[in-house]
View 1 (cartoon, rainbow, N blue to C red):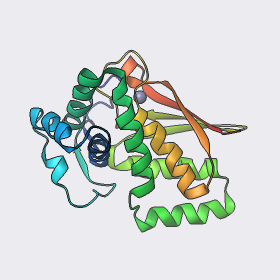
View 2: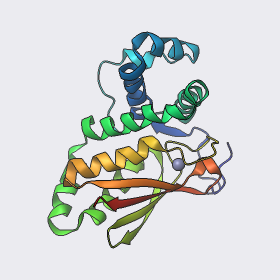
View 3: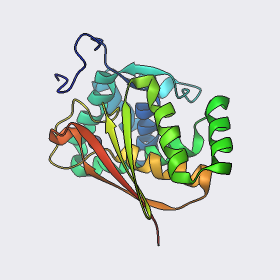
View 4: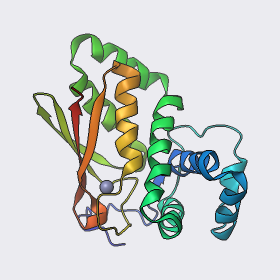
Length: 207
Ligand SMILES: [Zn+2]
């Protein structure tokens, strides 16, 4: 898919996303539909290798975006809207389990002493999204924040009829829980898969 808002001359032909996205989706599939059914699907799209990884990929490991999209499109075809169950669980588990580089942990620990969690999350989001070239803009709200993600690592290249970044939504919630011990609701209100220029998430404290 063509980049609608590219920076002329700066786009690489190879679009990348995180390996942890398909990795945790596949783990969720195994949990929910079992190893055999998962294998059948992965064999069909030539991605069986995702089942064979022994270690959780690190956050800065990237893969071609088209591989991740192939998995999501296939799941959408087979499971319809229920495919979201895999992505939600995957995002939550990824936030809980991934190892973050020490530089990122230091950033969070230092900033959380002086800065409120919303500003720390802006800082963290920028660092987390750097490996795939995504960019963020944040607006603070009284009870949370709104974040726009340009070049979304989950959905750019997909076409759906409602916001579909379930992995990212639950990843954001999971990270906030993990590092700040705060419960939030995360709602994706605009999505590149609907033709928007960015994905937009509302992150609001749970009452
Ligand atoms: Zn989206």
